[in-house]
Image 1 (cartoon, one colour):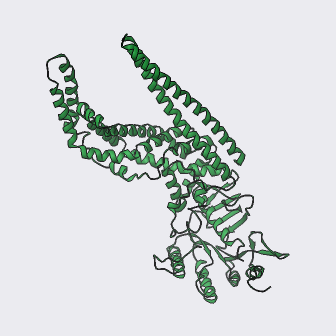
Image 2 (cartoon, one colour):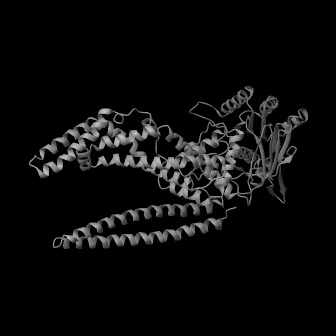
Image 3 (cartoon, one colour):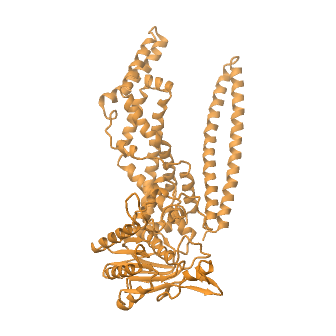
Length: 591
């Protein structure tokens, strides 16, 4: 397991490398200053001996070479700074302090079938604990996988192999995260780009424009020596420049529209090309990662080319560059034509490349979980309607205080009735089952020594609340959720159902009667049901339906005037209550 000290050591290592890069940057900066002084001196001497002008030119070229080298070092410095930040955050995460990672609040949905109840998104959520995705694409895919489930057995097993494959590649995973964090792509809207991919070309493959974009610049450029060495007036060149600028002006509005659509994604796509290049430089053994690897080389090359083409188009933003670019070379026509040619070649492939990036980027988060917790088990997928787990715990509770339990349901009883006092651990247990079920369904490691579960849908009823906007009371909202669960079950769907203290909005007699009737309905459905309740009277249902319902409980202990819990799951019905004891302890009622 990766420890606090391990990540702190990596942070120190990258900090040291950052300092070395900063030293190199300073050397480049001072070298450029010296070169500029030398260049000025050579230019001055050139007025007395033209030979010095040549040396001045070479000095200027060397200056720009150093500029390019310094920009590379600046980029490396940013990546190293991100690596320092990541490893310091990972060190704190080993102590279950993970608030620095994106919370995924934008993915939270109070009406989701189980996400809101299980704290999938938001501060302190499972998503925030897992998320190490480098891009918006990966973050969206991770959120989708957690909330939608839906993988078949073969896909789950492929994903498990890919996670194992990626788990050991800590340098690659962290480099990808640090590279992705160079660009903030969270606000990048891909819809305009996707729309542009489906548009018709208006220059590329238009025969007249293909001829004109080469013919007119050739004529204009060839006139320059004619004007210089003959008596031909300069106005001829100006006339040709006006003709080309006017022709470009006919499509000025459409060209500007394309530029605005593509400019927002230029730097982001360039960043994506770096991630594809990182992937291409790795070796993988798992079939799924080999598939992604096979796309990476072409994807990286073509996406990088796309970014360069957009950058070329953007140069028209400079008025002087636009005037001479279009006047002499019909720059707009060439730039748009090159982009349309690229689109024709890659319009179908680009969405597939981005989908591939989103998939393996999301897997990086799950591989990080595997690396940090190598003792977590990978779940076994079974066709039987059973869940079996050994030493199952909640992954968001520190191992220092986590209490794990063995779980078996569906062999043969499909309904586990869980009784216990307040704070005994019933709700946490339900969330433990739900969260580990999700991890198992997406191929991720499960916080357990052993885990087996089927591929079924999941629904929960734990945090139903009033909704003024939907004009629903708490009680009606709960009934609506129970109704939707029963409708799905009656349609034949197999489900895992997590219910916590249902029918709280009615009196105790009505609540007990309703709970009994609901359980009688559920026992005849294709479902695994965990129902937590304070109502110990429901415990007699095990005697009535021993093949379908069984009792478990969480008990508290009162010793020497102190209340404590062991958070261990026991068979049977809870016998102790703590409400009266706590009220007396707090002085609410007399001792």
